[in-house]
Image 1: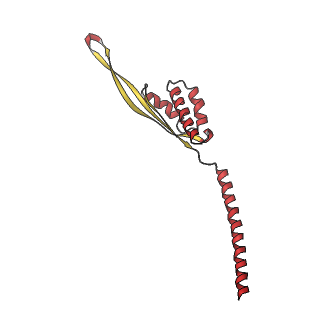
Image 2 (image 1 turned 120 degrees about the vertical axis):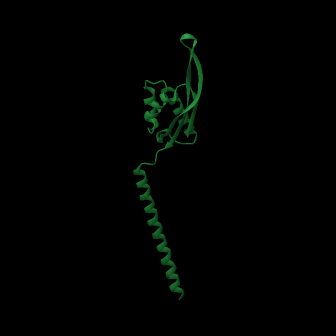
Image 3 (image 1 turned 90 degrees about the vertical axis):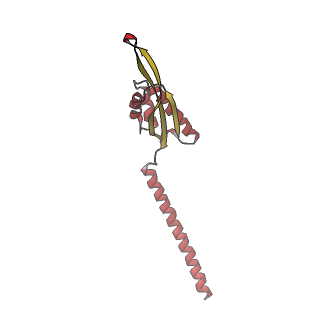
Amino acid sequence: MKAFLKNYRQAPRKVRLVAGLVKGKSVNEAIPMLDFLAKRAGFPIKKLLLSAVANAAQMGVEKENLYIKELRVDKGIVMKRMMPAAMGTGHRINKRTSHITLVLAEKAQPVKKVKKAKKEVKKVVEVEKKEVKKVVKTKAVKVKAKK
């Protein structure tokens, strides 16, 4: 479950501040955090997160089981512009862009569910052992009867 945002027109250094806040959080925690964050990068990252959740929903994964496994902000293209300065000179202005990659993953099953599953497996194994013993006994009786 991935989503990408290419050439977002904000410097990666500024976007990484927001990415660091929500990395590792569950989707249900991250969405309200991004809603009320006073940073410009909050809204595009929220849209990207919702896009990744929609991608996961198409795969049949529930939103409650998802967390942000990876949120990477890489450098995009840099647009170079000139700003007039004193005495006929010019200074270069770099307009930086960001590439944002978001990867969602499913949480592992809670320990309680795993313990219940182990108990059920043990019960099934015990029942199968009893059935095998019955079969062995009946075969042993048949072998004795033939002798």
